[in-house]
Length: 357
Image 1: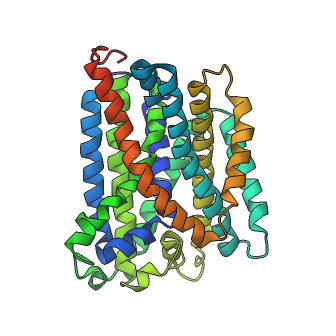
Image 2: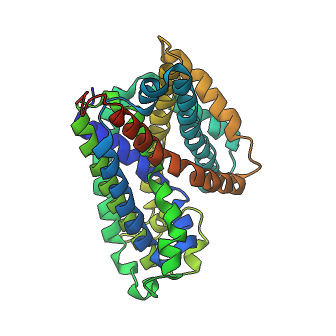
């Protein structure tokens, strides 16, 4: 079992990793300088959907196990494969975007394939040690990240220009509340919490952690995107692939400390390795539960290998970003609907309210 802080930390890491990559740029392209309002909006929507799910979710079982209750073996396998594909798409995306970004930023003379292989081995090794080890390392590191993140935002204050966030509604209200609704995909990684639900201590605790993780991740995302909007005017702000890294390059504290991006690169690398390890473990767990296997660790190597092969299929980084954006539009409705649908079905079947709490 994971403690409250360890479990909450895992979900926060899973959600917030997007903000260290290309996701802020996507938000800016949709809502312009109102991207931070867009994040507030989708955070509220995510909280409402989570509260609704919590009301009807009565078992300390993930959606694969609930599918078994509702429709037997065939439905369990179908839902298990669907969940696996959702997780795999997120893992494959970061398996390509991260190594390509490292090549551009840090190792221009290195092969992206070599970096991808190292990334895959690291993710597999992390998953091999198990979710308890991952969660402990993640929690300790997350405390350091939080302190550095707050310090980072404070140091950037001299670069903030309030004129940059006007017009306040960016590209218009429709871009925030209609087009921007798809930004709910920011929280698509909450599927990890459902997959790992058995590792929580009680059902009530897992439900509370779900809401807490969304709130804290939403706050962090708003702070980061607002800092970016304050530092860069639109449309220049939509030209940078990695906004968080661009902000890190602005930080200078006297002549003795002018390479803050080195700290960013360290934090960025570690948190993404942890993210990848969480996903590899979650995928192995899904396969184990879907096909009622008695082993998990032997699945890790094939999963990492398949993830590596698929991640190399897109022609380049921009193709990967495009495919990721398309897949996010498919994934996030499923992520929020699956727990609601199977929670409602088992609730109506009279399986007992809070039966596993």
